[in-house]
Image (cartoon, rainbow, N blue to C red; front, side, top):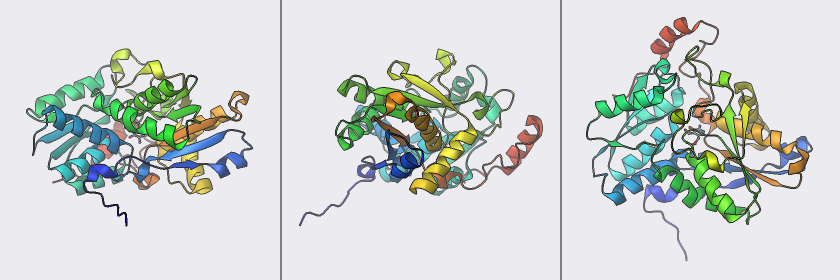
Amino acid sequence: MTGRIYHEFSELIGNTPLLELHRIRKARGLGTRLLAKIEYLSPAGSIKDRAAWGIIRDGERSGQLKPGDLLVDVTSGNTGIGLAAVAAARGYRAKFYLRNIIAQEKLAILAHYGAEVVLVDSAEFTGPGAVDRVLARIRAENPGAFFTDQRGNPANPNIHEETTGPEIWRDTDGAVDVLVACVGTGGTISGAGRFLKAQKTGVRVVVAEPTPDALPSAEDPYAENIEGVHKVSEIDRADLPSNYDGGVVDEVIAVNVAQAKAGALAFAREEGVLAGTSGGAVLHAALTLALRPEFAGKTIVTIVPDSGERYLSPPTRAGLQAKPAAARREEVLETVLAPAE
Ligand SMILES: Cc1ncc(COP(=O)(O)O)c(C=O)c1O
């Protein structure tokens, strides 16, 4: 008998399945093979479990992370959830700073894991240098904490180069022509893209980025957005996370909220895949490519970072879209879930 018992939570991370999207392809008469890597099947529900494990493993190996330490970062939820899960399994505490426009489910999950949550007004995150200012505040407020630094910690892209890229290569038997993903920190696209490009010349790496109206901005800090993902084109280098390696990216396709939601619905209703909105954005970009004659007969791998289950409830900005930004701000602050005790 060959049993298979896992002895440590981190062993459950990775090796997510690659699913062929037959019905989506056939319904659109496409000659391109579409595959989806289903990252919501990871144990804490998103691709960010990989980054969380990579960062914690690296901190332990370097001796910077000590038993009982407090992990701190700014997150749009998924990294926080991944870190909170690994922290629970390995005896660390966790505290995260999130925008106050956030899926309610993510807040509830973080509270359930026992992580401390600090909600930051979304307006504080907008404008040049804003993220760095929030990060400086976090460092100042948490002396002695282990700052996981998902935007700059090389352990994040490195784990994708070590796991995500090789899994795609292995599971396609090397028959991968295009990788399409969204960028939050850039960990996924940079690490997996780097690995795939090193295996085979000609692999194309494509980013699905939000259109400007699909992002909170200085004019509209509470805009409906594709949670967790950022623009990479026409952005000051200083405002891009250092984990984003633009050198591996061949093309950027802009996707708006309606297109991302339509992509998520196509995933759910045509393939049974309950993708979150960023996965929907990735599918929209992949379909844009598949319609081009040059991609006939090619294989496109899409990344589904998390589950649509995280976005089923109205987000903390529910019902606020039609109101002016100032009025929305008040309501957002009233409607957010209370931080964890
Ligand atoms: C929902 C969602 N999709 C995609 C991403 C992009 O992942 P990465 O940080 O590896 O670029 C993130 C990251 O925050 C995310 O939360």
